[in-house]
Amino acid sequence: MAGVDIAVRGRPLGSPLSVWLSYRLVPFLVAGLSKLWAHTLRVRREGFEAVEALAARDERFILTFWHRRLFMMPLAYPFRRRNAQGEDRGVAILSSDSKDGERSAATWRWFGIHAVRGTASEDGAKALVRMIQAVRKGWDFGITPDGPRGPLMVMKPGTVALARKTGAWVVPVSLAFDRCFELRTWDRMVIPVPFATCIVRFGTPYQIGPKADDTAENLRLQQKMDTLEAWAQSVSRD
View 1 (cartoon, helix red, strand yellow):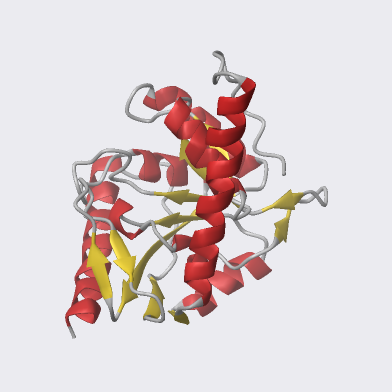
View 2 (cartoon, one colour; view 1 turned 135 degrees about the vertical axis):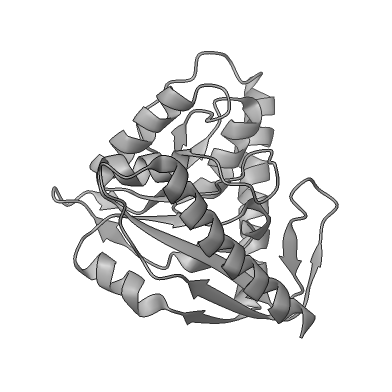
């Protein structure tokens, strides 16, 4: 499955065997286990109609969610899309040009999720340019504004800049589970128990004008995502 042809790797990944194990077999097994896990969940979506309408009008959008809600987030994107030239399109993510990033990209590829290579924390300008290129080529985008290493649930400016420069709609989203546990990672990753109920809640889509103030818009999006996170936590406590 082809990825977004934006960045080119500049260093070897290792021996042919290690490449096969780390970047072929392991991603295949992880993706397969995750899909099997997802099939056990009872899924329902709230606020999905507005996002469906964007896809029906062939408009691009940016799904924004906190890093701790990343697991099972493919459930928030059940679309199969094409660009004006009839080429397959879907959702893209930003993935670092490192060995960990390569492994992550190889895993997400099994979900039909494509990697734009770059690291916002190391060279935000270059990463933003590649993200803009991807949206203009017809991709939607999935962004964790507090990734890849935090601070936890603190907004970084890339999402707002991408929306402002492309005109793509911003769609805050979160996942909640009635039964779940947290990993002891920096992001306190939330993992559902098999056969739990999963609720995907979408915020109201909105656009950011080309002359909007990034600081004000960052605060606006932070508040929307904090509201969704409070809701998601309340579901797991009920």
